[in-house]
Length: 86
Image 1 (cartoon, rainbow, N blue to C red):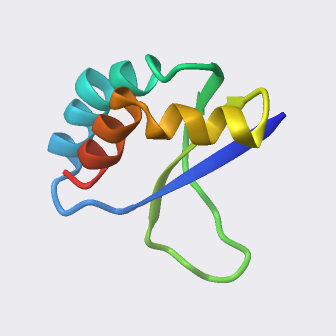
Image 2 (cartoon, rainbow, N blue to C red; image 1 turned 180 degrees about the vertical axis):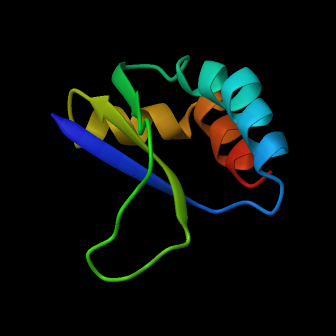
């Protein structure tokens, strides 16, 4: 199994981020070919190194690293990558 962890910094507009993340990005990401599981943190993220800019984390699980790479080379994968920058 392969796991990708995505870390999002604290956005300037949290309300916009939350709306876009849950209404657009998550539904898009859940269409990734070969995606087995999608987890999102629920609650505060605490860093043992003192970093405070982490706002949200997501874990995406795939059968293998090859399956993950194939997913992100797909059209949906490219859309996810572009949308993550919004």
